Image: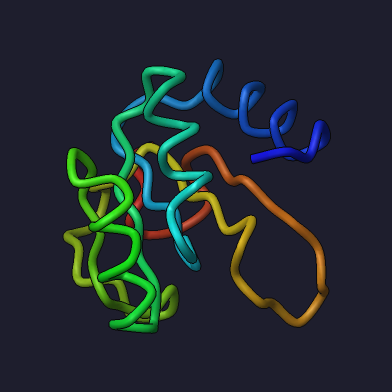
Length: 107
């Protein structure tokens, strides 16, 4: 990860989030690994099985799964937050959301 803005945003997120974090649209796993290095309980999710395989190869100590940010198979209240810095979204912005912005995130 070489972008100072991304590092700063993720570091600030890591300071305030509590509980597991889904890094949706994780791509090759760099942001997931960076968050883990900051002490966050994080796992990566991506639509592409090939990218998830690459992420697992690069970071075998981390958890990655194939899935969609719109259909996470998690119980309500399971997450402390979500990052979507690598995910495409209609606004084109990069986001980190601490709880409770979705039904998956604990209050």
